[in-house]
Image 1 (tube, rainbow, N blue to C red):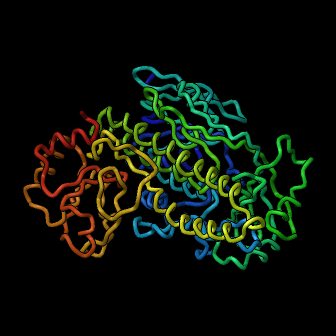
Image 2: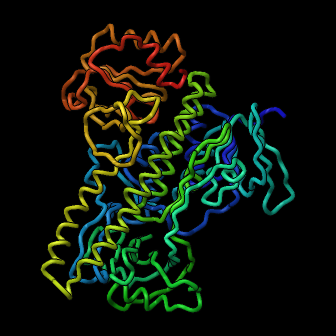
Image 3: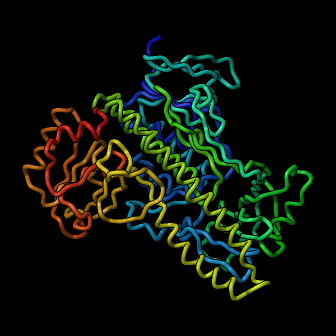
Length: 528
């Protein structure tokens, strides 16, 4: 069977759509198989970080996504944590990601996932190399040495179709059929907690929370929940909300007083008009590998965890950006097989670290705090510990800095390991995200980066630049040259030469040319 496409993507949520755009903009023939024709109007995945908005900017959809915002721009993606109830005397700002804004080339955004998907669907429709099958689902995935075959069926119609591609990607959620058929194992951590998702309308709650201007979400810590949050989020400004919280095992729509639960969490009575009541189990799942042969997984198919801190959709979209350029490089002939291996080697440790070092660690820290400190028992001790948490909230934002120091395709430090734990810096470090700086012509350096590798040369020797240009031409590797002076902020990179990958991570830095530029580029493009 001949190939119908170069890549088939099963799952057309934000991650699948992002991957399709990343590939489609590079001229790769793609088919997206998505089971739903209409978007699900359930608010989730709203907090889009600065890094995610760099992706959206690269995908040519930034203006459209920002226009889809449902609350004023003053309401960022930061929130508030309170003790006991939202209206208690104890609260502090939490997850204020604007603190790391200088290290990224775009502002963050807050948009319900269905709005993000609508914008990305419209962008995909503009790409001639991308086909979409909305209302279809995959039933079988079979691979051999030459490619991958995917059996698809029309959900509410007679359609039956086999797709054949060089590669397949499963972005089809936590119950991924692609992951199952590819026999990719997961490591599960079950917290044995039933959680409720409530979507409701309430003008009264908006009025109560006007005392906290510009806050988009609110977390409540109560001793009886032992570190698990009650979590309120705005969908718009004034009426629509969502709420996540633990409920007793066996809870159903009909046997629990959700209105009283909401009132207690807030600390006051208010009007509630329920739109949706659903349940989910609090657990972590991270696939042991993100690749098996010609099949890859990304997003919730690769890692699923509670919606604490907005890590889910942002982590998934970084998967899409990482995998997309690598698949394109191999299909276009300038990337090697090791480039595809690097996708799992880079992204799997970052996802595991996100779950372990941020979400799980936060639950444990909250549990220990609540067990140790109680204002009714020792108010002074509680208030000292609460003040420490306020300071720690700032440090947490800085320390979430995913990087690939352990990757085989970056010239990182010896013994480095890919992780979500790091620290934001302007200095250019192999394996880390490039921080933006202005260029002499008034552009941001991100506006000058190419779709392939980019060489930033700041007062660098002509011979060093020429060595890279010659080696790239011989390898057929796309290389964009950005020359400028080493001043006006660019000196903060700390080196004269910075080689940047297509996903805006630094691959190599130095003051001078490498001994063999060709050998370096072959290694960084996965050819050796």
